[in-house]
Amino acid sequence: MIKPKAGFPPYFQKYLDLVPSEQSIFSALHEQHMDTIDLITSLDDATLQSAYAPGKWTIMEVIGHLMDTERVMCHRALTIARGDKSTIPGFSQESYVTNSRMGMRKILGVVKEFSLIRANTIELFSQFDEQMCSEIGNSNGHELIVSAIPFMICGHEIHHRSVIEKLYIGAI
Image: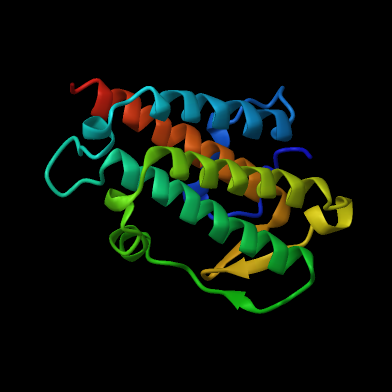
């Protein structure tokens, strides 16, 4: 699967830019996910439940956000790849985080779920053929090509891991 140059909302470009072009998207999805797991499992519970500033998400909430976003993006990909021409609505990331109750979760359970979601993502995209990857739909009022979605997922996680490293851990 080749990283597309168009067919997605402009605000996702920053995520696509974070994904190395010379690497297979499947390899990139696996590798960066393992890096994120290594990072979060190296942190103690107090750090995982901390935010770098008042009103900001905790690290656990950031991980919950990554999981929720990946699920939503996979739903969008499946909908579009299967030829469903329905307009796919957006989602409120703040509402999802608020209602996730990530502060009550244990890291090992979160890591298991996080890994299962990623395995599902890789399997979903690996079964899409060229035609499915080139399908374009409407998501939240924007044109969206299926082939952009795994790059968005990967780059989104890279972005948030960088935020955790710089603003959360760097602040300790």
